[in-house]
Image (cartoon, rainbow, N blue to C red; front, side, top):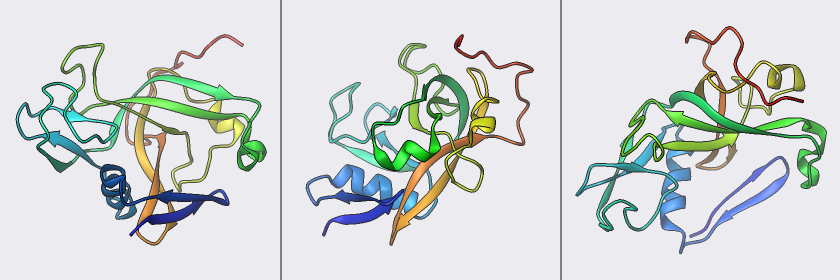
Length: 172
């Protein structure tokens, strides 16, 4: 049965053939951040896949992960192509390196997750909040419920973590 929901008035549909993504978004629907961990080499991976990108094993288990990390990179969107995002510009797309498995298997292939920047309650961040975030900011996961059993994972500043005095931002 397809997994369906809605985010910013846009339909979401994951069909039955997309089992790994259905599983991921079901975990998110429970506000449980879990990722696939290879049963053979013990490395976690994202995005969800049918085989391990490190050892090609098709055996994996879903493991809970602490949804905290450091902003590795970002893109600030100033002209939204998707109409649903136009009222939120500028908005930020983040790439967060998780504390879990940081720098493994190499410093260049660490476990990194994308997502929009949001406020702690899961709403897309307003421009003043976007302006506070930069490379090195400490982040935590939050969710926006998108239907029965499905939620969108988003990133917000980790209020409990020490933040850099001035996180690095791309020059304007």
